[in-house]
View 1 (spheres, rainbow, N blue to C red):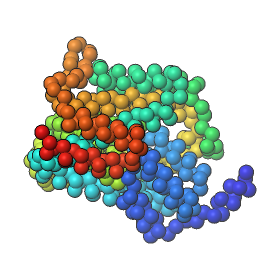
View 2: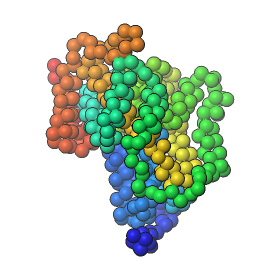
View 3: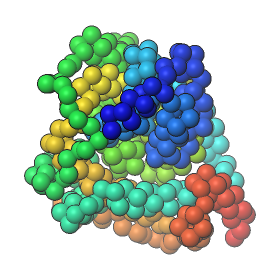
View 4: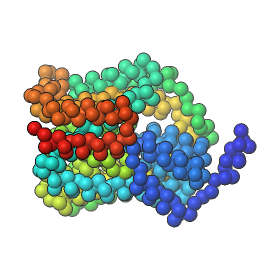
Length: 432
């Protein structure tokens, strides 16, 4: 076994910074398909083809990133860059993984804001919304198959669904309760076998931690000092910084909380949240790029300013992704020790189970709003439920059925399905 590992290590080579730059810029431009597809792409290119990192180190980094809040694929890219070229390599890899998609999502947000009142555009968006319903359902099934390994974990998922769908329990409370549940049922969670702990404790590189923490909060502090504390840019910076710390389970998990908060703050409407997710799904990079799309619309609609809209989008990008560099640069030196911590893995198992219920809540709410545009909250004491009201939208129903057929019966790739449904929605706009 040791001889095999030594042989693998000999085939590895450290790329030049210019090679690292080109590789991750390419990945950033073509990384469609969500976290699973992005991770698979990095594995094929960086482990199988280029041999820059070993299979063991790749899996060790992936295990670590699943323990962290935020976008795990971007964090894995940052980790690989850090392993190859330290802080400089981590910044290059993690930054370029996000940059192409981030630029594109802000351009799409601008186009969306300018064309939102055009009826034909609404037809296209209706098809994209229907595609999103199928994508979210597929995410529930895939994550559920991986995360719900026992009856107790299934109960955690059901409890999370009921708490958010019917009682309006806040997302952070559900996540905290799920982590505690995971610790309580820790005996059901198998220990990690991919890594062995060789360090005697967790080592914190204080200089890197201070630098990352300062850079993370710098734009928020500048906005706070230069503008009113109640200004949108300050609000966006604080909100997405908080979201970056509590978001476990990927972009779909945060959508329930993001949707509730963004609508309550008057940033976007509930249907615009569906549009935002649809656009995030069609761009390369993490699906969590839904954040800057929402922030852009907040600036455009609440402040009626293109400048504030762009600044809000940039603020959301920074405060969403900057924390990921902090987690990687601080946790990387103690990676084996962290991966081997049974308590952390037990807490994550509870959170992962709850995420299934949270994503199911997102899908149920989005589907209700899509099929019944006049849906209203039904409130009775602590009971809160988004209930269908008015006549159903027959065009949305047809498109949703088509989306389910394309995804689950014909197994079309995501981008192909979205394109077909957008065209179908455009065509249906001229019917009736």
